[in-house]
Length: 528
Image 1 (cartoon, rainbow, N blue to C red):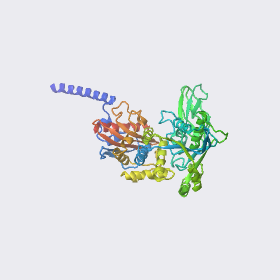
Image 2 (spheres, one colour):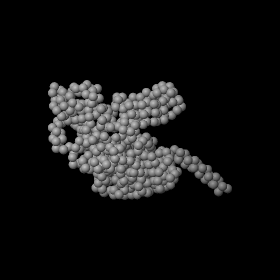
Image 3 (cartoon, rainbow, N blue to C red):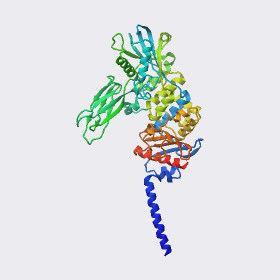
């Protein structure tokens, strides 16, 4: 009898404990992450079908704690930016800056420059509002001030946009055709404004069947032609996006459908970046009452000048690449006569960019493809002393990684951003690089450039209610079928772990892959 009573009490208590356990699981106190004994447990428990997983976890001394397929080549997506930014900080340092300079070929007389004015680009990716409190004309304001300080309020000749710091390859090989319509697939040029895109705002203020209203920056410029075929749909309809730009033109076709009252913003790529820069700058000056003294239908022209000794290798590169990705400005080869003329130009002033530490921070936190490709070409120019190309930039990056002690056998790189097809890395390589950079002289600039979980950048919306908020500094990555997350985790016990997580070959929603990554991070947070 006592035994039966005891069993009833035991069963009752067990049922109560089971009920509380289920409640705790629902509340998130217990989870797969808290019950798992290894990363492998979590991967095996995942119900994502056909996914190729790769994981590498190290402690703060660089020793491997856990791994799964860590030496398997994976598509890294934007985790490639970790490679580019680490090499850039290693080679050029956090204090490196760009200079965009104005020269004059002539003389000043009564506040009029008699002759041509030359804008010399050096690859500054920040001539936009991103690093200047959203003032997209900040750099133009500074350049205008340089003219006024030199006593110039008008001119008689043309503006010349001078190219030569980069090669003429407008896109890295391997970028997808569809990407070239949008802000993440823009042209790369040493003279670039507003990330080589126009910023479109669409407002569906009207009834079903009406056309939405559109405006765009810069200032509804006529540099682009907007063909607005969009339509306002039914009240219950959803936003259906469609944008296209004709190849090698600035005719933008808009054919989206929007529900009534909907507002959409989109940055669309332009064609001919240096011409866009000069067109925008000359119109900006005119808006501020600075114009040529002599009427001309062509207020500016764009020229490309390269040293004679690079003629053979550049022509060879062009032949190898093909004309389809090569911009249309034929080079003026700078023989002694051309150089003598250039030496007579007068430097009127230069705008200096913010330091590399700020540039790399934006590059990684916002996962900016344009910034990454500009930095990659800059590496080639600064380290090899020749017009910067993507291929030469990759050579510099590989050499930098080798000097840091990484085995570059496991680095297959086609661009600096990770957008191109054919990029491959291993999570072991990424975690090893993260360890090396944690002890590098530029470690502060590198680590602080990474998004912070639940707080900023591409991680601002994730794990906001988790104890891991603010404890993960990591770079995200996504292209179709590939998702990655790599960085640093500060655990509950105060340890700093280094991790690289990658998932390839999935057809699930990205959120399901993210959930597995977050379970792994939670497990690591409590386990170590």
